[in-house]
Image 1 (cartoon, rainbow, N blue to C red):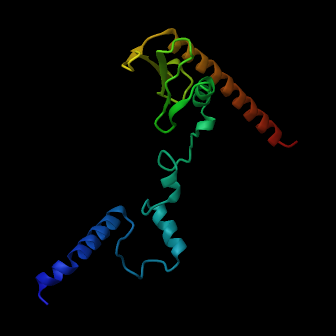
Image 2 (cartoon, helix red, strand yellow):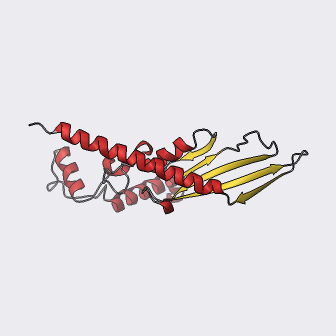
Image 3 (cartoon, rainbow, N blue to C red):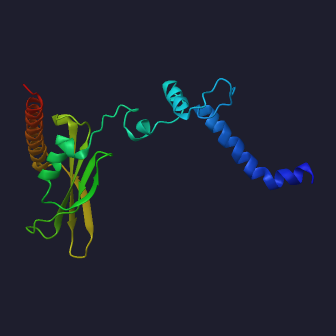
Length: 190
């Protein structure tokens, strides 16, 4: 069997093996070494590799911000909770905590049959601040022939929603801090 035939048959496998080994070596996961210097105990090898920053750690993979373990869940974010509670009368079209956006579906109170509104709330920070959220209101006006025009509007709704969300978020934050203090006091034994 000639070398060209061998490479053509085994080429994809060899290429993928070379790429995989180079990837593992560059990540520090695989590095050929002297067997006399490597501990036969796998737990010791894993511990040493993690201390040296080599290898992979499940803790680093699942936590946000490089393995700090500081999770910010939607249920613990007062701005997020407040917004969902304020907008609970509206049907929601998109709720993406990791992307920091809540979008309602088109809503019509029934007062004007040809008009609907859609509200989008963008979270710019997790802190309770007036500049931490941006509220956008779109209005859809449809004619009898179902020709619809959509436009972004500036109205009092934006300001009213922002104030209501901030007030509710402050209340949630106070409740959380109060329960946290209560827990710490009850945790201390005399």
